[in-house]
Length: 385
Image (cartoon, rainbow, N blue to C red; front, side, top):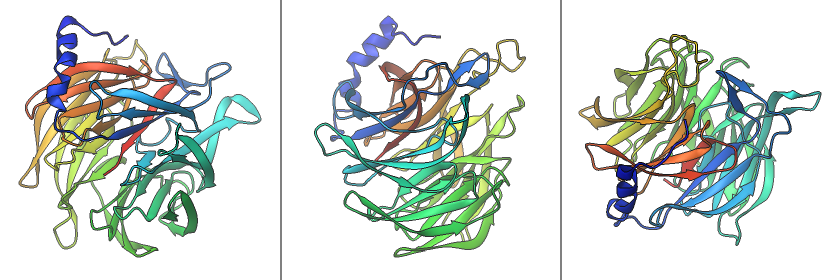
């Protein structure tokens, strides 16, 4: 399916200034995998793949516009939280969980690279590449902007880096499980004293304590569902939400709400969302969460579980419960989501279409409002908290 604007969509795009009129300048950073295409439901390395890229988008423009594109390694493997943007939008960190196998260009192997992109440079540019751990996937920068965490899917660890300007310095690793435990997404609490890490390999969400540059495994794990994968923490620090992607067997999967104010934190609500909730993002105002659901759009067309579209579903957070508010059809094999600062615009990455689909949100409905074409398949996205 190619995303095209209908007349209604064109009208929605024309109305977009009303949706974002009170939003200040804001950047969204999309990491695009050039070495992954979907061939009848199979993630395939194309012949002579183009380089991976990173697209920088100005959400303060109306409509949003691409301001730069740079080359940097990334990967569709892992949750689409493989991009982190510093609170002051000075740098972006882009992780790369896989790379082409030097021995066989038709395959990929785990990668350990994280690129540091200077967003203030003209044009933006990669200033350095650092080594994290095998399968570097989810990445997060703390609210103070001086500490970063990277979840390493292929070795069961989280790497810790101090951040000073554009310089990242390794400050150790936290061992969570064995190489198959699959640390995937990582998120900081608003006070920077706690972090959560999803582990899709052994079905846990681990709690980390943070004291300055000292990060430790709190030996406290939560159990939300089968293969917890994308997660995020509310800007208010009261709750977190995690999506449980299951085994991809056509069953309806789930998302869970974690009460961070409880002592100790615990899962308090779980809802059914559909097949494979790949991406998840809480709105900046802390009132809603957007979940991208593959809905079988990544399955072979002859599969009984195939659907010719993905979904983005918005839930309200009220009283430590998740309440379904709005739903919209999107493209195929869709990945991450990002909100504008005013929580009125939503971006959804769709791999097959090689585009970021834009939707307006008024608190009750999602309305298509255009699309942004990118090079390669958009596989991870981030904005400043």
